[in-house]
Image (spheres, rainbow, N blue to C red):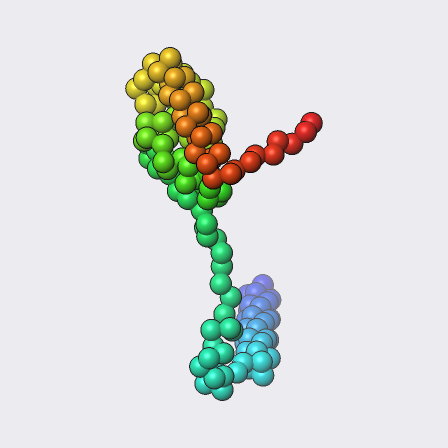
Length: 146
């Protein structure tokens, strides 16, 4: 009697699984048919209008990448990036590591194999150069008041 009960339960489970799969197939077909009425053949559009149909992402548009010791730093302000690019490479590295990554002079010195005093002098010289370059381009930075 126990074997008959197990067989009955197995048959019920098989019927349940079969019904479940059939319903899922019906759902898939229904979803495909629902999408068909909204699809249009692209050949119905004039070639001049096809460019207006798409969506274009603006990711990384106007961003400037600087590479320092295997790290990529992105600067979005074009005028500032242009001024930083005009600095000598050793001063660029110090400015970017200091102000964009937030490293201390000691950490920068370790990374670039320099002493702390050299890092300080390069940063100070680079800031003067940056100020002069940005003033030539009439760049004004407005600080937020606390």
